[in-house]
Image (cartoon, rainbow, N blue to C red):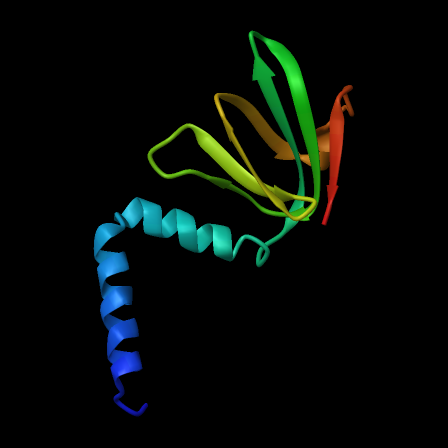
Length: 106
């Protein structure tokens, strides 16, 4: 790699950004970027007040836990979905297909 002002600047910016990011945040960011690498079929059910608000049926997707949080994130139809609170994640084959479901076939 040829040492240029541009390369030096990019190296300094990268170092600065990484120094401001905690290990948990860095892990979350790297996991979000690679969330399409390991996939399976999941049912993600979101509850509020004991009632099912929404079910996401994820096909060939990835669900990950937020570090130091009760939150979860995954991709649905190309969009990042983040949930926090009462969430049940299980294999899609366990789902009874309750109402208000969203099919996430990416």
